[in-house]
Image 1: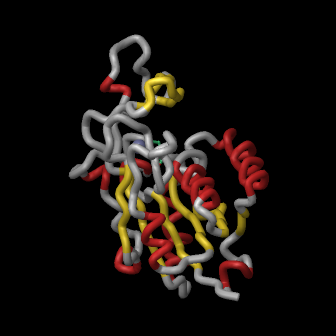
Image 2 (image 1 turned 90 degrees about the vertical axis):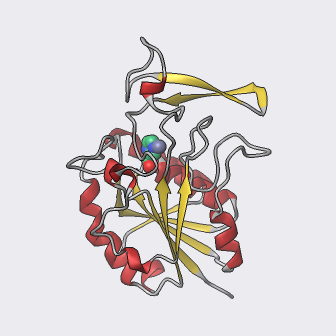
Amino acid sequence: MTFKPALVVVDVQEDFCPPNGSLAVQGGRDIVPTVNELLSLPFPVKIATKDFHPQDHISFASNHPPPNNKPFESMITITNPLNLEETQETRLWPDHCVQGTKGSELLPELDIGKFQHIVEKGQDRRVEMYSAFADPFTNPNISRSNLAQILRDASVTDVYIAGLAADYCVKFTALDARKEGFNTWVVGEATKPVDASALEDVYKEYSKVGVTLIGKEDEAIQK
Ligand code: VGL
Ligand code: ZN
């Protein structure tokens, strides 16, 4: 039986962390020692992802007219530009992870030299893209990263996920990893959520689809 694990570290970027991040997740910076411990393990494939938006991205509250343009509060409807009958409700955010800004950079205290690949996502202004694999409009996806291709080219069987935020990009990346056919594991203590109250539902969804929540000491990760 083959087993080839990859570690995927999602969006550990300045804008998602105190003290200066525009969309700082409480305790976001505190996961770095744990993520660096994971990076010191012999995963044959190590990948970082970056949220990487243009300034006119649809998820920025600043790009919408009042009154429905409050960051963290307002929801808007996004229409699939390839299928106008398909729409989705999505949450608006402060400007964050704008290409070329300090806020889009990976935290310097991360052991960045261990990553073989850095996958950027969220570049298409027309769609939200929490998952590091693809935007949520299916068949065809409007915006797809090269993450699935990197994992397949490396014959990866198992994907271990850490990073930010537990209830957005980590969640949707994990659900998509499972959909793409990988055994999928989320290292709970190496993530932090935007809304702590959302985690219970996230974990329920994981167990429904077969994503496994583990600790860093778990034997599944230490082998
Ligand atoms: C994220 C909100 C907006 C994330 C990205 O990385 O979890 N959250 N864009
Ligand atoms: Zn974003």
